Image 1 (cartoon, rainbow, N blue to C red):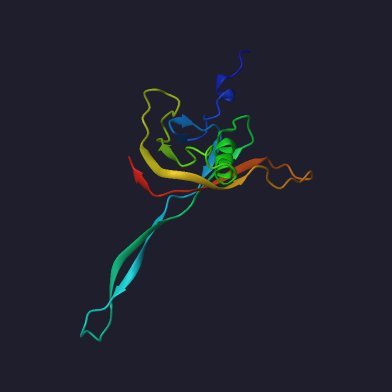
Image 2 (image 1 turned 135 degrees about the vertical axis):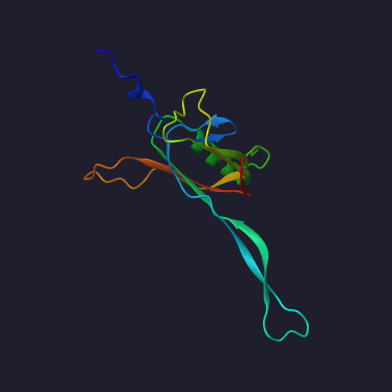
Length: 160
């Protein structure tokens, strides 16, 4: 009996891809929500004693967390190490802020097919790793799997 080729496909059950500077990050199986909020500034007008008027203020973006099963792919770990180099040797810490793309596919589509275009794509601008969990809590009595996680700070996102 011939082996199933799909059993070796790391993207067969995922309907999204995460790209770091156009390179797909292997095995990302969970992604936190993209969210932003706008602070309200209270404005008061001279002579108006009844109240204040809200006006949009500063925009803030929530951190994005990626989770990846343990694998031989060290892309996220290498990127997380670049932020450490910033303090140890600033001259060697180049390109630690990078562009991340999130491509979301239709449920009936195949992300691996060259003809399949993403239904949605988001671009996260100037991301850097603020938290990296290399190894989760280990418990010999459980049947859990190892998950790495990375928390990204970014300067905004947009739909592309």
